Image (cartoon, rainbow, N blue to C red; front, side, top):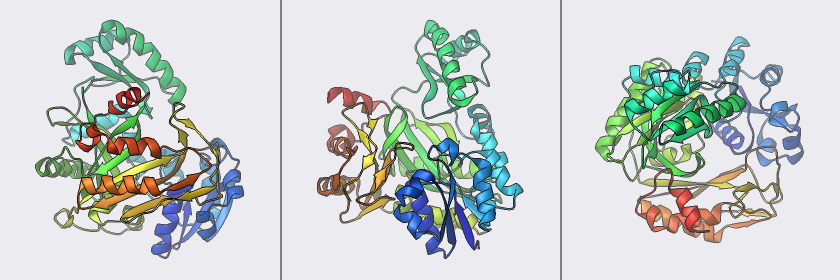
Amino acid sequence: MFKRLFVANRGEVAARIVRACSELQIETVCGASTADLEANYPYLQQADAVVCIGGSAPSASYLQLEQIVQAAKQTQCSALHPGWGFLAENSLFAALCEQHGITFIGPDAATMDIMALKVPARAAAMAAGLPVVPGSDGILDSPQAAIVVANQVGYPVVLKADAGGGGRGIRRCNNDSEVTQAFTDAAREAQSAFGNAALYLEKYIVGGRHIEFQVLGDGRGNAIHLGERECSIQRRHQKLLEEAPSPMMSDEQRNHYGDLSAKAAASFNYAGAGTIEYLLDEDGSLFFLEMNTRLQVEHPVSESITGIDLMQQQILIAAGGSLPSTQDEVTFKGHAIELRVNAEDTNDDFRPTPGQLTSFTINGDGIRFDTHLQAGDSVPPFYDSLLGKVIAHADTREQCIKMLVAAIGEADIEGLPTTLGLQRDILLSDDFKNARCDTLWLDSFLSGNK
C-alpha cells in the first residue's frame, strides 16, 4: 500500500480523495493554487501537507504537468490521484508520473490515448464487440465526404470533433446543405477548443437517452461492472442530475450490456474505474458513445446501490490489489439519485455566480452530501461552479424523489444563487416522475417555464 499520495486536483473531488486516503491510512499531500491556499478549504486543513503548485488560473497551476510531478517528488509521494477534469485524462501526465516513479491512479497512458480520440475509441469498441452508432469509418476530409456518409446512414446526422468533449465541435444536420455549413463551423470550433479540427459523423439518435456503465478493471485482463447510470437530464451536454439504475433498463438489458462493457474493459487490460457511455434509442438498443478513463462526478449513485467504494477501489487496484468481488457477487440494492449543486443563476442563462457562501447546510434522512465547502467559504471565479452533490438512496425511485425534494426544502444556502430550485422543479415534473426525459428534454422544459 502507498504511504503518501499526492492529490492533483481541487474542490469536491480533492475532498473525496483525502477522505478515502484517510480511511485507507494513507497520508495525503494536496497541491493547491494560490486562490485555494488563500481560501484554506476544510480538505486542505485535513490533508497531511499542502503545497502551492502555481497561480489562481488553472493554466498556471492545476494544468501544469511538470510543476505537479515535481511537487509530488519533492514531498516523497509514491502515488498521485488526478481526480476528474484538469489532467485526469491526459496521457502525457500519466506517462510523466510513470517516468518519475510515481504511480498514476488510473489506466496507463496507452489506454488513455486510444480512448482520448473518438474515432480510435470507436474502432476499439467495435473490436471489443460493443455496438456503435452507424457512421463514418474514420476521419472525414471534406464536407462532400460527410455528405456521402450522411446519405448512407440517413438523416438526421451529427458531426462530431474527434478530440471533442463538453459539447464542443458538435453539430446536428438534417440535410446536405446543413452538413456543408456545419462542417466548417464544427471544424473551426474543434480547432479552437482542442487544437484538432478532425471530424467524424454518426447517425443522430432521435429521442436518445444517456446511459453509462461503471466498470472496474484490475489491469490484468479482469473487469466487472457495477450497473448503469442514467444521465439524460443535461443542458448543453452538461449533466445536472443522474440516477442508478436507469428506469428504462430491464434486468435482462442490464446484464447483457453490463457484461459487454466489462468484457470490453477486460480486453483493454483496463486498470481502475472507468465509464463506458451509450445512447439508448427509442427501440431499447444501446450504442457506444465513448469511454471515460477516470472516475466520474456521478459515481456516488453507483456506490450507493452496490456498496462498493469506487474511490478506495481505484487506489487499492493501483497498489496492485484485486477486484473487490466477482461479477456474480455484485448486488444492486434500491435506487439512487444525485443532484449537482452548482453556483449558477438559472434565471440568467446559468451564469456562474462566484462569491461567498454565508450559509451552507444540506441534510436529511438518507441524504449524502459530498462537498468541499462550509459556511463562510468563498467560491472563486477561476474554476467550475460545482458546490457539491446531494445523493439520495432508498428502496424505490419514488422515495428518492421525495427525499431530495424534502432536502431541498430544508436546505440553508445563502450568499449565492444555486441550481437547486430548478432541480426541485425537475424532480416534481410529471415527465421526470414517469421517466419520459431524453437528452433534449431539459431544453424544452426550460423553454416552457420561461
